Length: 488
Image 1 (cartoon, rainbow, N blue to C red):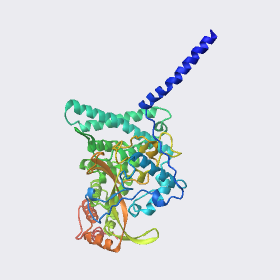
Image 2: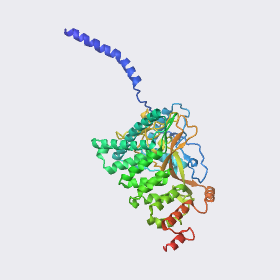
Image 3: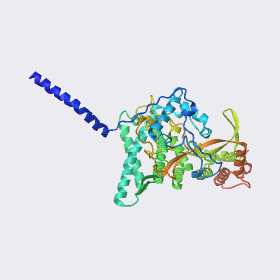
């Protein structure tokens, strides 16, 4: 009896080993394991071979308010090159970045900026300034995942609504539903122990939400489907966001409202933001609005003027008069850069958010990445972005970047049409920042000639003063205003 049981067990084990390859093959078909790429990089490799190939783009000097005509900066040429395996090629780029970051976590960025004059003038943050501490990063990651979850469900309902009703969905209602669902998810997280939300204060959660919204919900309309075309409108979403900010007590919410007041493309959103600021401490948003008067885009100065006038901010009158003594913010001026005196100007530039992941974030396939941190796949030229609304999920871990390192923070973002976009969507996100551009003597003279006698920012400050005081001097100058108001 004993020997028979032993034989039966042996037969069962043998059968198991015979079936294992088939089961394993079937399982591999069901679940594809993530691809990994290993590259041996010679320490003697010249620096030029470790850095991305710079794009061959020359940006003409121009002064314009047209956002689609602003210089577009790129970290590298965005193409397949000789290697047709785009994922492997990107993994090789990431491996080179990690090689340069071996002894200095910002080694790649430092080397890149030293070799690239077109990027050097951007407002990069380095060291501790570009890194978010772990607790805040994990809290932000939870906000991102919550927003993604709500967005996916809301988008699905919009598809179903259009399929059944054969008409445009009620965007306002969907926007309200979106924020109500997000509120429910956050309340559930607050009751669940060991979650970042449970451990955080209300103020910390609000700050994380504001940061997540800036990256995921601020940009314009999102095209969810090309045929039939379904669009998730940005204006209703941003109006609901303004209403949420108005309920928050934190100074971050005041600054976010002020930014919307000068950067939001829709009149309704800017008006709602200004109205929400009326009941908040002026010291929390004054600096943001005043910076709008010195922004290189004249339209931003006009919006700042409108906001300050509607808010009746008479306390900033001395600041506005002082601005009339200052030159156009785009005027070339002498500056010390890298120990040298040069002529430089401030200009607004744009960066395609989806094509320049490695310009803002460091690789995520390294040790020390906190468990639970949201990471994002670097987009590839022959595949559409995983998620145009925020952070998505990809395949190989060797092409991911981490979201707790941010070298650049945009002033504002918009979705803009891109020609010959396929396989990517026609509407893509662009981030806008101010760059300091070094000029030759001839270029500086050309820019100075293009500037008018009366800077648009001066006109905006003058109109604001007139609206605040209900009177105006004989001339739109700082001296005339001081004389009228009997100021020293």
